[in-house]
Amino acid sequence: MSFFERLKAAASTEWRAYTEHPFTNGLADGSLPEAAFRHYLVQDYLFLIEFARAYALAVYKSPRLADMREAAAGLSAILDVEMNLHVKLCGEWGLSPDDLEQAPPAAEMLAYTRYVLDAGMRGDLLALKVALAPCVIGYAEIATRLASRPSADAVSNAYRVWIEEYAGAPYQEVAAKAQAHMENLADRYATPAREAELIAIFKEATHLEADFWEMAWRAGQVVA
Image 1 (cartoon, rainbow, N blue to C red):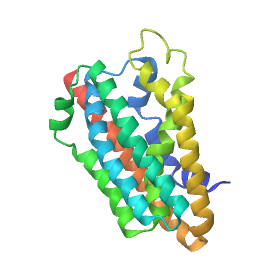
Image 2 (image 1 turned 180 degrees about the horizontal axis):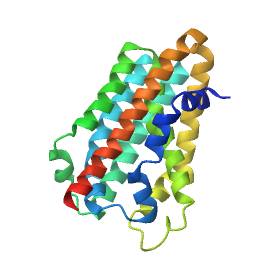
Image 3 (image 1 turned 90 degrees about the vertical axis):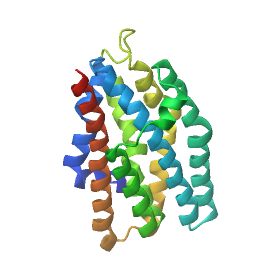
């Protein structure tokens, strides 16, 4: 069993609550209230800014030049590619750059991103990568599951673009590379004595990711 599979097995309850949250199921069948998705889009933009900081921290925490290059590539992808794509998607949902930049950060967004940064500051690069894993690798797993649903790519499903983006080959490759890099770090630094600590980080990060879905889900329910 790989390191990542051991993390998921140890955090099976948290992982299921995250990857099978009603928000994700609403994306697959198109039933998610639009208000929930708009709220998610705004907070995800703010999340990406903090995510970029985490990758910048990964550069600093990298013990080897190859690790630095991997982190720098991730930082560039967020700042130069993913954020632009996100702004474009938000525009299609009637959200302007000003709407995104002026929005107040939700407590759930701050809780997860601050936890990730704190895990990285206190620990090594592996601890930081474990804290990032639920998002980076989890989105790929979630999107793959959603894409298999019959209504996922229906023309009537307004969320098919989101599913296609994360289920598509480019993002799946990003997630696979992130997992491979984490496995490599685990081979170097994840001693048996440390595994409980890393599992605890993964569990909490996964729980906070589920809270992020829940935040957006509740926003949709309030409007509905």
